[in-house]
Image 1 (tube, one colour):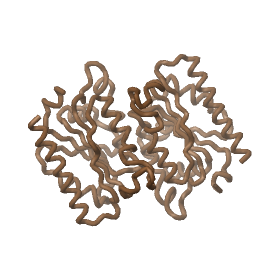
Image 2: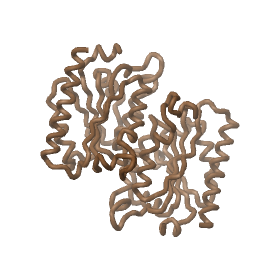
Image 3: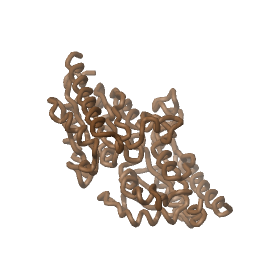
Image 4: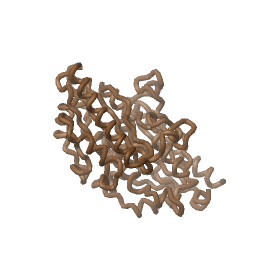
Amino acid sequence: METSKTNSGEILILFAHPYPQQSRVNRPLLRAVQDIPRVKIVDLYEQYPDFHINIQLEQQRLLSASLIVFHHPFYWYSAPAILKQWQDCVLEERFALSEGGFALRGKRLMSVVTVGHSKASYQLDGYDRFPIGHFLRPYEQMAIHCGMQYLAPFVVYSAHRISDAEIENRACHYRQHLLDYLSEAEHE
Amino acid sequence: METSKTNSGEILILFAHPYPQQSRVNRPLLRAVQDIPRVKIVDLYEQYPDFHINIQLEQQRLLSASLIVFHHPFYWYSAPAILKQWQDCVLEERFALSEGGFALRGKRLMSVVTVGHSKASYQLDGYDRFPIGHFLRPYEQMAIHCGMQYLAPFVVYSAHRISDAEIENRACHYRQHLLDYLSEAEHE
């Protein structure tokens, strides 16, 4: 867990939304956490509109973080494409997996996801047929494969229908969640 | 099932591999099916190196098919990024979901996947912790959400280690699998 200790407390939020200005929920969520010290937000679509990821820069950013957050709306039960491009390009074997690599070992990964359907829909007997964690398995297993700990996802359900007050409430929770992490990481 | 009937038998293979020349397994697989009449192969990375998908063209291709195949190696327990970009762009709500849309209803979707690890690894007590179908849930549920039938995936395990003879064997099976589909579709 050496990596985690030496970088304790820094949070890297990789935000993936192709049209953030159209998002009722994601903008308030980001606003709620953007001023937290030791939180770095990277807007992947803004930085890489042509999908040409700067691999070295992104790897450096990872090294500085102890918690990595994949923050995105659910598009087809997964993240928008830019995050997959980031995974495919940045998590090179020599960086993340092979001997001499394992740069992510001991860090944590958390998914922050907004979905249109309700929590009741994401059940075995619901419309979406599985709890949301089942659709997040590729991220969970990616984390484990890289020696990371996969934290419970932070989910905002019914994103198209919840009231502004509920959005603010979830945004507050998001902020508190990250603050709690930073506080705990300081005492580890 | 009207759509399926009117286009019975056409197979659209959406192939997603950023470096197909480096793939021991995927090239023989493609070679084995490329001369089958009524099989259309679209190499997504070749056609869209800049990720700018031609939405109208891709939607037209879908309309002509009764079976859509997502053919790709497993990168981080999912498809390479271009296929997600294809999903995000092509499967517009007005095309695939809303009233007047539902253009894919009655069609079938099948994943054809090559993975580095063994079948034993993709078990609850294996290294990858879940059967491969669990990682494919986002595709399965996407299909169901669009009114499609999701067929059992065709998987080539241990892709880095199997012999050339085994690759040829799997390629023959792939060919036969598609021929069987075409034959059945003709008699539906």
